[in-house]
Image (cartoon, rainbow, N blue to C red; front, top):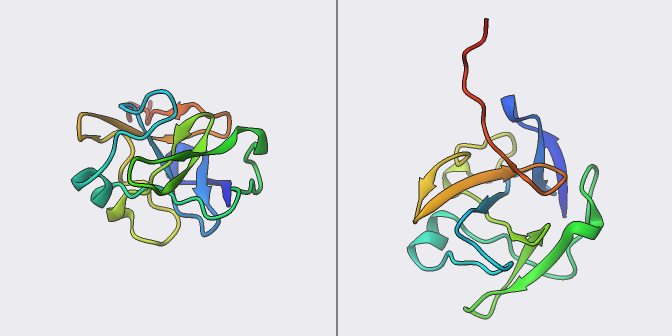
Length: 125
């Protein structure tokens, strides 16, 4: 299940059914993953068992799946393959991978509309 939750200063972002943050990889194109091997060890793909379900705040029409070259199936949202960030652990509320540039491109959390959420800098008044 993919739903939304408020995570820190990022606002409402996509998470899985347990509240674990999911990310998109800016290197992916055409709805296909480009993250395998060492990349997938740090950024594991969100697996698609049965048809992905939309929970609170997520748009069911934007959910889908993509077949990976390793034979597994990955959840997509708005055509973007979704990933976890291993250092986030398996609990909710962590988004340590937001904005990291690893394995050739930047990783972002996603908004319910399917766009990347870019963390804004501090600079408050």
